[in-house]
Length: 331
Ligand code: UDP
Image (tube, rainbow, N blue to C red; front, side, top):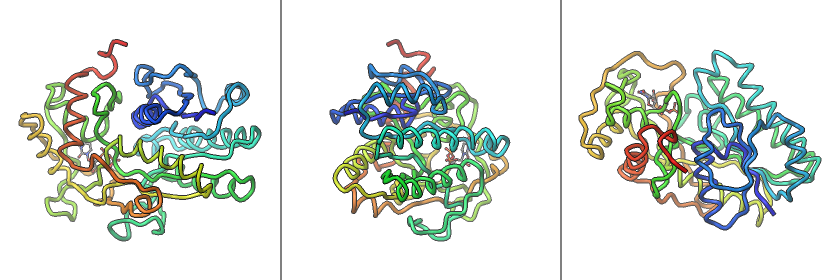
């Protein structure tokens, strides 16, 4: 039987597909390639299209024996979601409604959903526990929470079992150096820093240094993308063996400030990485660190690449070998 991975050509998706293939799973990828890259996935069963395309979904579910769906296809930029919430609900919620309808129709009972630690909003305690209140501060996180709730009802009504994974900040790249993070335009801190190290940008903007943290910059929990990828495999095993719906935080439980990330990148790249402090970015909480104790205990998940130096080194291996992202990859 096969595993359908939606958004499998994206950053987290491509690493998850690589991990699942390495574990011997049979993978089908569905991706509209709006932000994903065909070159990032090496599977034969690749469908270019949208999760909202019900005829396409019918074809996929009819032509393959699908055991589980890993749903990563989504739009994920906070600022964009504030400007265009209708688009975000369409892309992130309507899509899942259609996907779940087809899962119900074709009797597919397992789904792993890519959620976010952003659904907690401004954390009430650090590290955040799964039982903490969810109070999203932007439409992007609201769409993720809406889907988590829909999944709970679909379990009750149709017996569709789900694992929702609330990710912290995904970072790093595959240790083989062949796949990595490539957004256009780039919005995330570590790739932006590395673009400065490559001479593609002049400086890094630090979005605010007046936060209530030691050095005044925001603190985040950075988790290696391969550790996230492995958590998807373990979630699949959980659904196969235990068949119960779950919600898990995925992070290292350790936070690093923007300045600490820049310092570590200076060490890894040997570049001075100039900075300029600018205004705060709307919607950014000061500190986000999550406890992943539940995932560790129940899934047996142990982050392998938790060390910040390794996270930035693997990202640097990718960016320095592929300065134009997948545009400079011949495959
Ligand atoms: N950040 C920054 N400059 C940038 C990009 C990001 O100072 O050019 C900060 C941002 O305010 C946040 C942290 O770096 O505190 C991580 O941001 P990113 O966009 O990578 O991930 P997010 O936390 O939004 O998921």
